[in-house]
Image (cartoon, rainbow, N blue to C red; front, side):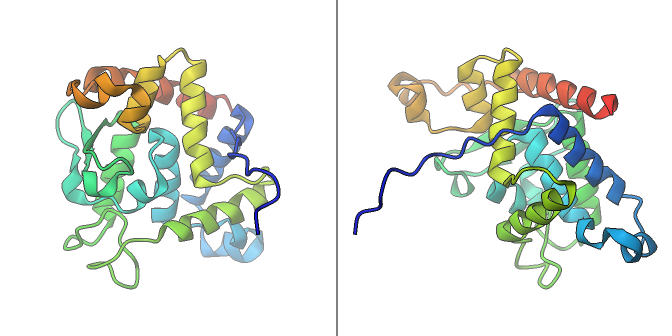
Length: 224
């Protein structure tokens, strides 16, 4: 049977107030104790890894699976211009994606790498099998669903955070082709010349765009 009507793409974008509420709720958990949880907060307590993943989704605009399955070997966190190199086997378009990391994102990765077992290859290893598996993408979706319900925010998914980053970058004046590069959209969507002949990585432009977005996010957080 044919499906009645056409499915619509999701259009959820978090307004600034909800971005602030979500981020600050994650920050509050950093100081929560078992006593707080027993009193009233148990539904909102997420693991440190889950909190970091959600923050990185909002800081970088990358896909849920790309963040969750990040490997320590993909990260170059030393020096003045940290970068995350996501290999083609882990990207939707099959191409290596170089993503410059601004200070907040780089610091989040540093904390997560430090917290992970030293022998694990993963930034966010599974608690049950840290040597062979990561936290699952679906676990992040479920955790976010619990959190936004507690915060009384309209339903939001990890992909909605990616869409929010893209939308906010547009509002902040970041050119379309730079936003597409940051989000690692398919080269074909950028035209045949871009897909076949242009091998420039645009690190400078991507870093500038992410710096603008990170600055805007920092202002939202500080305004609360």
